[in-house]
Image (tube, rainbow, N blue to C red; front, side):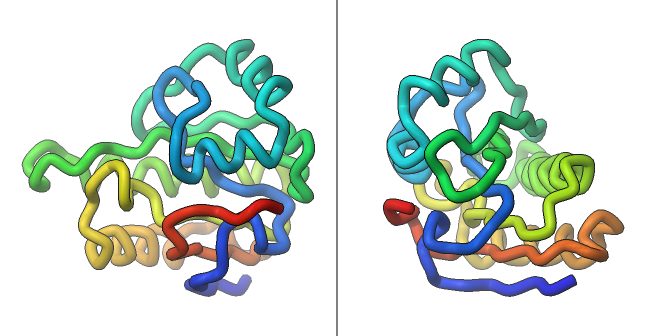
Length: 158
């Protein structure tokens, strides 16, 4: 397993699966989510997401990668930062745990993950990096998986 924190845009990373910072309705949105939808093919990805329906905060679901180089898109809904008084850290941990679990079940060898809850959700970046590192490094699912944590605020066309 290799774990690397990178500044490269999410969609520029070589990965079997990329993680989308989704909203609960799995709808097209701004930021990384919108760029993933645009690069994958907005209409087919939205159809696949509508077939799933929704995703609660902290959970993860998967669609195919459609037009991406990655075979899968793992969608997770991170918490919004509300000052740290509402269990945000635990919800963020659950996002990473569920993403890694799903990636393992899909037999993903390389996973590209954005810094979840950053930017639009207002999570403090240092705290978010700490949570991500803690979960990824202790996960039993990443023994044979390379994980890239992208600190780039948005992805680049892939």
